Image 1 (cartoon, rainbow over the protein chains, first blue to last red):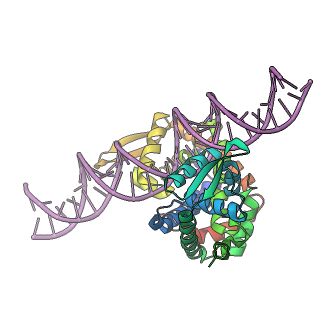
Image 2 (cartoon, protein in one colour):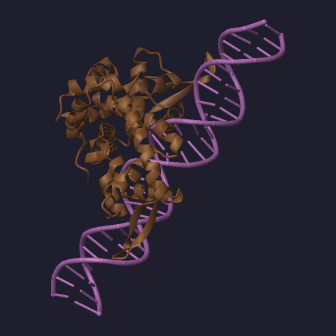
Image 3 (cartoon, helix red, strand yellow):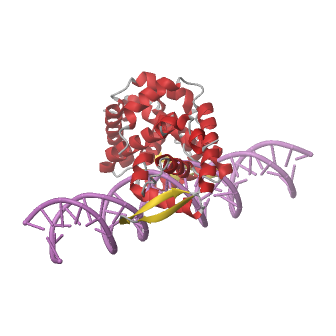
Length: 152
Length: 152
DNA sequence: GACAGATAGTCTGTGCGCAGATCAAATAAC
DNA sequence: GTTATTTGATCTGCGCACAGACTATCTGTC
């Protein structure tokens, strides 16, 4: 079998036919859009997600530890540890040792963290709306829900 | 306005309603699937994309330089430089200075590179098919095409 | 043929994303 | 109550992803 014949699978029309590559490229572009939208607030996208998730989880006065935050945000525990440390360095969140479990660190959003999160949510939603404007959001969400997998 | 009222935007039902977050999570999961599928071949997903793209571009005996390869693959020029160096170290591609332009490096896929690419394409297509099996691929591709942006 | 601007490639530096290992504290088993 | 296992957090290390800077070369214009 020649090399050319072997390539006559999905790569027949060039690699750009693959849904996976399209998904990858789309997300990279979306990440750049988010990065640009959050740059004025000195936040990366992941930092925003963790900050917003921490605020969400703590909305009823029960601030999460890092494992719970990672589970909510769908991020790695190690990375969550790193990013949370950066958010702490920026004064947006505070970490205290859990009085009931000295291994765990309870994460609280500070006042300036809450303020930054409010502005960030506005910026992200505006950028999101613009990014997804060309397509039917409901239809896309329907498809992605079946692929995203459970929040580990 | 209270903090709770401010949060009553898209985050009302929790952050998981956002198409952007779904897109992000889906792609991360897809990346893990690709990583697992390519691990036996000692290739990362990006390495595979650049190797396959180099083979695609060179299929008519006109091997590309790194800028052309990056344009085809939709990757950053700098990262393309790094990853191509890794592929070269693995003996999968070879770089020669373009005789017509001493700045440019022409990229050729070696015999072992072509063999690895063949196997990788099989592995990736199988993993891809399984990943996207739950949804209508055509419908998803249609949506993503409108969001992926041109291949810069 | 000299010079301005564009182009090809690489370097530094920051920040994810994840595998594997470490360590201390909590929990379960006996 | 001591041991074994699990759990929360962090560390090392590798590989993208990208911004900004830098060198070397090529091209267009005079």
